[in-house]
Length: 422
Image 1 (cartoon, one colour):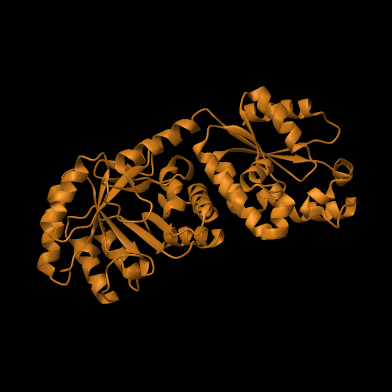
Image 2: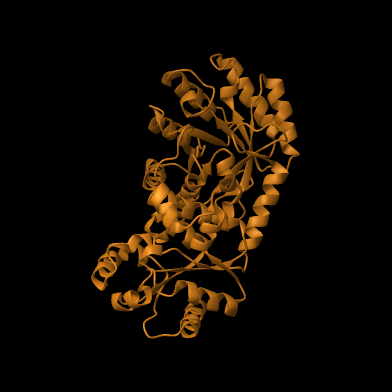
């Protein structure tokens, strides 16, 4: 991935940077806030111009930029004009928005510019900024929902295609599964984009996306001075830094091994043996969800439906980023969601356990009531049909391991050999 250097700060390489927004009523207030940020432990200052009332006055705007740059000193200054449509305070029309951004680009004071991808003149403004030598964060914010995972990935790719130097998406989650979706989109961006990116889920439910940058690969996260959060879910800089370092430390040399595959392929048994041999914790996803929900998997399916259960799986996988490595026995359908696969690959290694439909049928004989997806299709033919439907998702694993005719100990040893060769 290409990195971006802004003054002495390199974005997209090494430890994610922390930005703190400045929202003040006047130029003097902004300079005072910037002075506080310089001693807070942050890496970058975001000048939120939409907080100021006199932006239609060119003299005020150029003075604001000049004062902010002088106060920032050797710290990079990001200029942002956040519109009301994307959660900010700016209510002017597209022409005024474009004029303000052009002034910021030409001022020589801003080290980075945030341009909203939805702005009518975004492409023109991107070009103006680049001709002025100022790199651009192309951004998208949604304060009432989180887009579907494929749409988030599409937006990231569209930003890169449009010429962004950094791509940013921030959305409001309706629950932990939405936050997991955003974290997963960041993981996928890290795999497929050639530019740095920022993936943020807002609010309390999305707090983990601000701290798990070591997992998602976001180049920048946003914090606050103590008691001065400018967006839902922001943490004070020292607290944010400690949380990021704690998660990064847990990722060092402590792997996750995800055992995926159809029910009856031996995930639970093999996971127990593998965890013992690798001296890692053991996590049984279905069992953990049942314990947290206080009800069985069939009951969740019957009461809330399969989508709600899949949301629980996504939330569980996301929350693993705060834990040290483990061997995880995954639910048979957990890999059906691409966002779950992205999170698993970002956290560790995914192993697909396989078995023939006849073997699975024999192993599951008499268990259909406890397994919602094979009710009314408990036969080799029914199992074969469902296996074929899930095949593309299963085959996205790092390694396949055939369990037919093998003992759990043999399977665990084979997985360990594959992991050593990875």
